[in-house]
Image 1 (cartoon, rainbow, N blue to C red):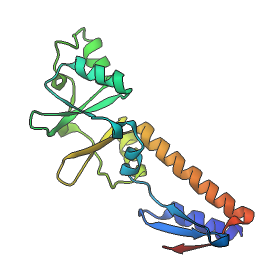
Image 2 (tube, one colour):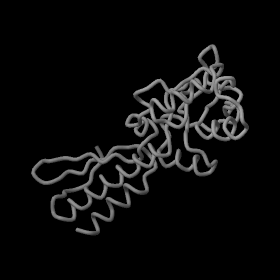
Image 3 (tube, rainbow, N blue to C red):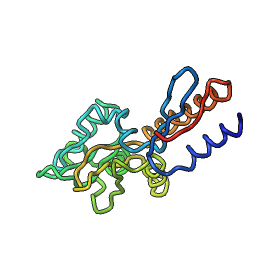
Amino acid sequence: MFSIASQVARRCATSGSAARHQLTLRAGFAQTVKEGLTATDAWSKSCYSDMDYTINENLPVYEAVQKFAAYNVGCLVTTNDEGNISGVVSERDYVCKIALLSKTSKDTAIKEISTKSANLIVASPSETVSDCMAKMLLKDIRHLPLLDEDGGVVGIVSIKDLVKAELKEKQDAIKTLSDFALGKGGHFSAE
């Protein structure tokens, strides 16, 4: 019994694709285990999915600070007048470039303090949560804009969103394997 559970765990842990597999349980009950959560999976459960996470770079920083406070977020995607991504602005940008330099948020444009798109680290919606986390850790950042194939912004995820998604995936895997070990399991097969 444990060798089969070990094989299931090993297969779930080593597969790099977002393929789906089905664990068929006794009494005809089937549970689907999804391997490799994507950035889209994390974003769909994020507070960013329910708000307009963009802000025009020509607005005063004060507008960004108001949006940070209203939605309890730490980063916004900045856009130019044509609506294209121009960078990101974060609470850290505010603290380091406005508050500490004795500038005023009402007299400073967002584009003066934002991280420009040329220096921006981004992800695609199909990248795995693990890959997104690795990018963030490597560059010591807390937010990743999600861009489609054409470079259009389709979302933004925070490290918190990714950790929550990863934790949920691990909890689901533990429950599935525990059920299996307790005799509630069946066999593992491709869907």
